[in-house]
Length: 76
Image (cartoon, rainbow, N blue to C red; front, side, top):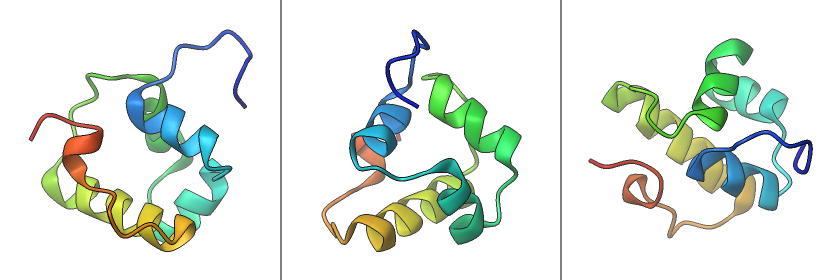
């Protein structure tokens, strides 16, 4: 839902630009929709390492881009 005036995090912008829906991410990671919404909207959302890894694995699978890494979105 890009372009509605919402500020997006680096991760949220990446998801939007690659046409990945939050529902797809929910299904791939098992995370709650509310949690994913927070992650996509807040740059400073604090995440556990296992959550970040699940998101990266899901994004790699959904985009086919194996070069995506945690450091692209979060300070690790």
